Length: 108
Image (cartoon, rainbow, N blue to C red; front, side, top):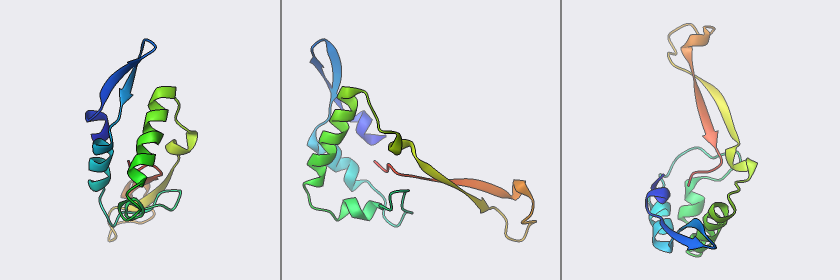
């Protein structure tokens, strides 16, 4: 993940807590790809890309809290897996003619 490569570390009370700066979050937001499927929450990258610029500050606070408290909500791991047919001319009743496609909540 791009954000993880751009972080510095700050020592708070003898804990090495990653520091996330606004520029790193902005760079991650601008690198999101458009026209991708929505996650379980119904959000697509365009919601973040076209939102108010203050979204970057809120995301920074969210990721900083996740890292400093070492807690990620179970909802961030939620996904939907859909079987997608590999070959439409092949046997559609054959299990090996399908591949899994996963849709996750967290795009960042």
